[in-house]
Length: 173
Image 1 (cartoon, rainbow, N blue to C red):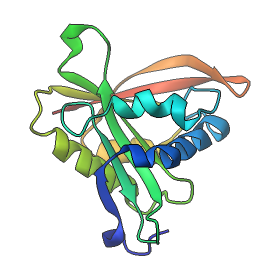
Image 2: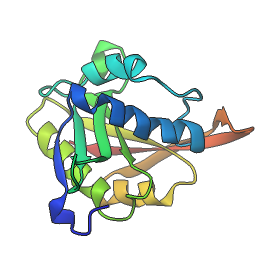
Image 3: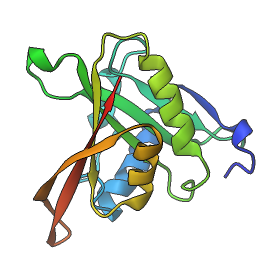
């Protein structure tokens, strides 16, 4: 893990990141309720997701890498469609995942900073984030970036033998 946040690099994601991004995401699939996916993915299954985040446009993928040889992936942040209907086109849903062991070191802050800087020139009006509850770290991160609470979907997801709430937040862009 990086001892100095200055050594962490944030850049657009690329196809070469796919295996590491898949491994990172699969940790959350297997071990947490943070995502409601319930079966791990192969890199090939995740390829369409990666390709849906081009370097330009409102749907981005930003990747944080560490200072060690090979620069391991420490996390990623995305913006994607909020809903599929055309009138939602100026809204995005943001997502952020930090590698196990890299939390609490500012990686999420660097990722969201880079993501929102990249989105600044886009024709966007709002960003939305759904946070499975409880998740204080994610709630604090989103508050730091100006997201405000707008409501909760109660017991909307079933994973690990129980129901989970998702709190929704929005941010003006």
